[in-house]
Image: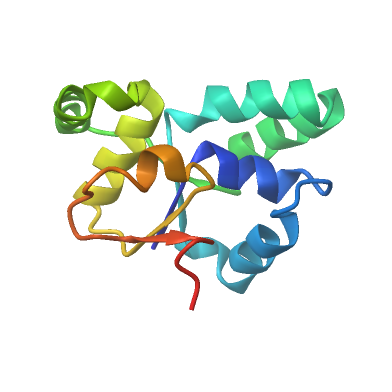
Length: 138
């Protein structure tokens, strides 16, 4: 399972992103492995609309609505864990989205998080110690 952070999804969508090829290859190898935490959806929508364009944002929304991505809508314990992570790593100012991604990855015992945000994800001790791709690519 690969839990996707915002930056990974934006790179997957944006053909001009320097990580697009890597994320596209990772996704296309087994799209059913990807899980998208609910909290990244508004960020991806905003960033894609702002930096890629309205048409790409419409396609992303249609893909979400059609079930192209497996969305993890979370459970109450995810928010409690996200709050704990935010409190423990207060100096990083993780925020809701990154903390929820971490909480969902931990709950699902994910071995991989697709993220470009090494400043946050690289500094947090995530239960199960998932690989952070592309940083930890073999």
